[in-house]
Length: 333
Image (cartoon, rainbow, N blue to C red; front, side):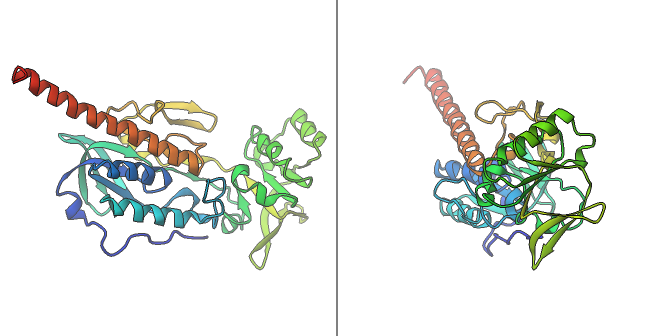
């Protein structure tokens, strides 16, 4: 399985240096959403600290798609570019995993897995999510190449090919219907769902898709290239690419520790935020997949920017209110 590149240069901050001041904003997570927020806030001359575990959800993919001006670009290079841009405007990035987040006298305190501590007035959580793959032998090794999940991200590249759709739920049949515009050769595998409704099966078949009820027992590859899925009776279903539907798990421990409220989504309970990313905890924001399980890279970037603009507006409003109070105290003299 592909691993993330180490993006931290030799001059990165140390645990002692990040605890030496109260930051305006600590951002937990350095993916597209977190770095987008960091860039705007650092350019607004806020003291910004990003703490990044360097495990973005899309790190297994060689290319990302649907990102304007960066279609086909490496997601790891996008993050590396973001690191450079944030640091160029005096943002600080520290490699580490936040294991504890709590309120403090200054606002918030976080503790990393190395024991480093840092305090801030505000907190943005951009920890993202992870895909929980089924335990089919060979599936993880093809993740991000021959096995993918998002039609918007990879459907175009699969056009005209033999597509397998590995359902995880009855509702997941919608993914197969989305993919029908890309290919006339689609097989939908339903064993992980259990009993599959007859009406849903007939609708898939009416649209020209095959429905395969036998269990998938392995992934067949030749020279690293996926060629098919092994079935329980020894047969092989030939496919060129598989679109899976793994459960998405929020990496939201800091939000849980702080008591942020959740809301129901089609993918299960998720942290509730308002239109600009505020959570139910005053001073805490969530962006990217931490707040929206459906957030693709451009959506995550937009949510980070939106939160940063609104958060900086809060800082400005506080400064104006303090000045107004001082004027009132002195009678305008």
